[in-house]
Image (cartoon, rainbow over all chains, first blue to last red):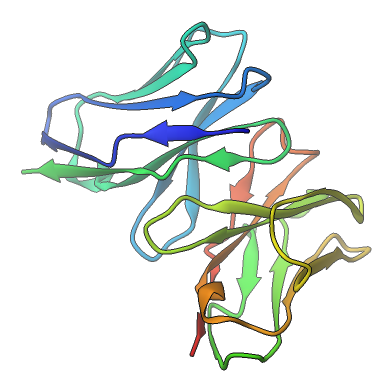
Length: 108
Length: 113
């Protein structure tokens, strides 16, 4: 079946880069997404990448996809305290299968 | 433009009761999906509707049902509530069947006591 795995926790200092990793098992995945969830809130779509792409950059966010290893990463440059949240990777098509989330803690 | 709106925001129900959750998608979006997020976990897919037809169902018991109306809004119904149904219920809408990404609402926090 489909499975998406993430590390549970990441702590960085303000101004450093953060790298959040994700692995997935479904080889038919066509779209892979990164969502951000702040306490008590819904999910905010940060970015997504098509499975035929290796990299996508969007301002401070860089997504890398290694389709051979089924590995997805999200790099946040110049991490700020406002980036503290839980980050979920998800894969589709149609229904989203989410990982359990990575809690990013940004220390001043 | 209004985003995805869900009502109510919070709800407390007793075991055995029934609950109806509502979702209004972004204007022009024809697909609505429902997800259950238990505390400390990622969201789990429950249903997807597109153009008022069910397009997918997750691994949830028959106590869970949903429908989509002609205006593309949607309801999620849960019968015979169990304590384990306590969760954040998220609605997501997309323009088509989701290939361009889903926009989530803020969710309904359901507590079953």
